[in-house]
Length: 108
Image (tube, rainbow, N blue to C red; front, side, top):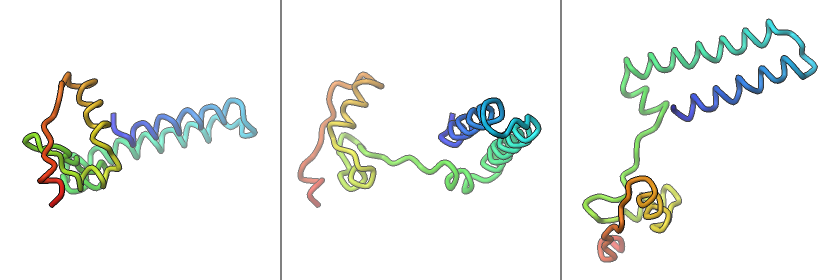
């Protein structure tokens, strides 16, 4: 699930709630909006499959924070992350015990 899919899901749920409980009791408007959102999601997924560049623009590209045991401090600053956050995520998601970091390479 991409972040865009999550946003679509939240907007659809809000639209459904407004159609059922809000001032606008029009089910037709809710169905049109929901179908439009799903159609946009499907079209964007086809666009991403046809054009890798469009996929990079829509979903973004991954940022490598640690390569060969060396932390990229500039990339971590760009993502607003601390080394402790990266280590915690590595322990929780991958079972990594420790990561070697090089203080001399990070100061360059």
